[in-house]
Image (tube, rainbow, N blue to C red; front, side):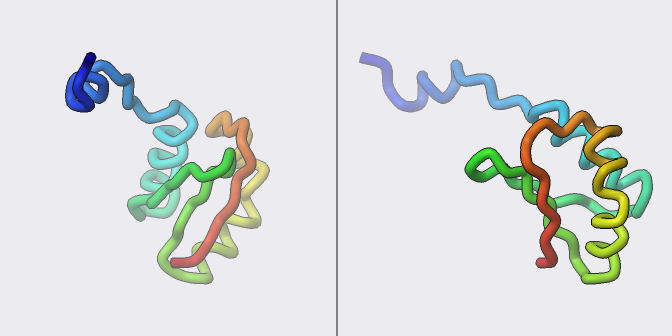
Length: 78
């Protein structure tokens, strides 16, 4: 029987391309490091303040297209 260490070593833990693209977009367009989580088939982007969240929400359809996001996409402050 394999140990947990062996199983985790074999697991592919690369970031999905949409997460990488979203991080790059946030860094390039707004100069902040994105905190992204994936829970229950929803991609959550946490931003530091409300002004930035509002700006990103106005550009949400463009972000989904440019980053190739296929899951539900939500932006939250915090």
